[in-house]
Structure formats: structure tokens, C-alpha cells
Image (cartoon, rainbow, N blue to C red; front, side):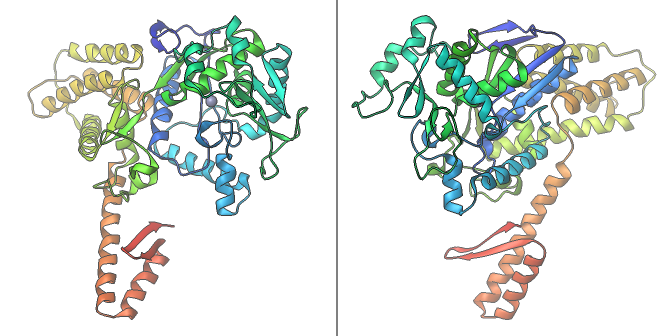
Length: 486
Ligand code: ZN
């Protein structure tokens, strides 16, 4: 099996360090907001890798972390912790925020049929491991203490190793592109990054350490937790392309500084999702949560899209290609998935012909596995599955003859490829239902609006109360009413 390694920028044969065991680490979410479209692609990409490796009889230990401390605003070394900020705004304990959004994330992943990882460690539960790692880095001479904080000494590291090897950056460029420090900063160089930060008086997420009461730097948790659960050398590290720099670059530097070797043998990165050609962002008004997609309640969506439609849509592109979300493309994915699953179901009812075995089926199966072996080329594998769909549909029309053995071979191929490896399952009925549900709620709200316009407040209140009883929360605003499911 060939996988593309971001580190070497080429495809390589995948050979686990300790076959049949495979250690896989993927950077998980920072839990301070609803899971959104940007969370779906890495989760699904590495879920398919996890499933495919298992289908090839590897024993995979899949670690996907939960970031609940240390990730500051703008991914920087200064600013408020993302979770602490949400907690302040909502007047909650930070761990309440982290727990709530961890549950939300898990629910969304379950809906997308993403298998739970083998271990899902939280950064806040591994402060001791992170402190130990900092001590190793200090001992090796690649970090310095300043005003109770500890920073990684990038320049010193780069004299012996290559800082920038993953992202292709050169330290000289980084030096000229970053602002010069005014001498007030506790960092020696602007590109040095925090391993430990002393907590300011208002910073509520804080732990004891040899240097100060504070909190770990964001990049540290993944180095510490991957080493703890997968060892100082393991097979594959994955994540979204947006994490290559600085997050993964810093992870490599930390591991090399502490252990004397690189941890991950192979780095895999999924490309980003755009929406109608634009980067997704809160300021652009195209930031879509997964729940909004599943219920069709975002203004850019023409309808609800089922979790399986989203999953299928994502798998129809290679994970290293960009993927543009739009209604037309999603509707095409919905139809395509329906066709695929209908063909699968119809195999049960197909009358076997007294024919000799069709050699096209073995060829299609071989092509599917060949595509998956070629750096998880799911779009090509899916294209070959549609060759099988055409064959099945031709058999239904009496234009092609399939023997009992052919039908069984197709059933086995579909079960393995569609259900086990691609993780697709029938939920078109629930998508139709959610479509219908949305239309019915909109109808009830229209009737209520009409009653209000006629000053029939008894009826409008009655509709609202009945909706509330059914779990539909109606909010009245200046521009009409909005609703959500409680
Ligand atoms: Zn990470």
C-alpha cells in the first residue's frame, strides 16, 4: 500500500514499524464551539484510513486527542485561551465548555459513522506528561526559561536539525518575515514558541509546574500524548493541512529535541474545504455547523443534507484535493449515494441466471483495492463501484446475465467496500424525513405568522406552545421567527 508522506513530498510504500501493529495519531478538535464542516473532512479521511488498515488485517491503535487547554486565540502564544474565553462569555467553568462540546463532537461523529478512536486523550488530563516533556527539552538544551514561561529555542534547534522540514519553510525567511522584538517580550525571538506559559492573574485554567503556575503550549500535548500511547516512534501522524505550520512543525521539533528522533514516520494531511469557492469563516457568513447541514437551517443551504450525503460527498474527492461545497454538488452526491445503495439492496432480489461467471466482477474488485492502495484514492474506488452498479442495473433489465456466484461476489465486494471501508450506510430515509420535518415546521410557523398578522394571538400562542411541547424552540426576532430543535 502506498501513502503520500508530507515530509518527503512523495508516495511511499507503507511498512509499519511493528507489523501487524500500526500506531496512528490524528489531531482532534479544540472543543470550544459546535462541530462544523471543517471537522468532518479530517475525521472522515482518517476514519477511512483506520477502517482500511483494519480491513488489511493490521491491528491499529488510533489515538485522536481532544484539545481542552492551551490553544490560544489566533493559534498564537499570546491572547486568551479559546475555551476560557467561551467560558467567560457563557459564565461557565471552562471544563463545562470542553465537556459540552466534546459530547457535541462525538454526536456529530457518530452521525457521520466515524468510528471512535482507540484512545481519545484530553490535554488537560496529561499536564504531568507535558511537564516531563518540557524538562527533557530543557535538559537537552533546546529551551529557555523566561519570566516563569518556557520557550523552545528555534534557532539553536535549527543549528543541529532542520526547523521547517515539514512545511518547507526556511528559518532565514521566517526571520525576515516576522516582526522584530522590542526587547520587552519575554521571548528571545519572535518565532520561538511557548512550551509553558505563566498564567496571568485573570487566566483561570492553571496548573503548578517547576517554573510557574500556568498552562502548557498548544503544540506540546500532541508530542506528549502520542509518545505516551504510541511510543517515541510510531507509524502515522495525521491532521488537516492547516496544522502543518506551526502545529506539526513544532511537534517534530519538540520530539526530536526531547527524544533525539522524529516520532512519526509518515505525515498525512487532508486538504481544506471551501464553500462556493470561498474559505469558510465566521466573518464571511458561510460558517456552517454540522447540525445546520443535517437540518438545512443555514441560509446558504437549499435543503437538509444527511450525514451520509456529507460523508459520500467528502469521499468523492481525494483527501489531498481541495473540495468545494455547494448545493448542486451535494444534491448530486445525494443522488449518487442513493443509486449506489439501491443497487446494493437490489442484489438480494436479483434472479440468478444460469450463466457462466462474469469476469468483470473480479476486475472491478481488483480495481477498487488498487485505488485504495494508491494513497486512499476513494474517488477512483467509488467510480469502479459505479461500474458494478451499471452491471447490476443491466442485469435487472435483462441485458446482462449474473450467476449466483456473481451475485454473491458483488454482495461481498459492496459489503466490504461500501459498509466496512467507506463507512457508508443507508440513511436516505432519515434525510427525506428531515426534509419533510423542516417543511412541516416552516408550514406551522407560516400559519402562526398569519394568525399574528390577523391579531389572533390565541392561535399564534397555541401553535408556539404546541411546537415547544414537540421540542421545537421558536425565537421571535425583528426579521421574523427562527427555530431550532431543543
Ligand atoms: Zn496536534
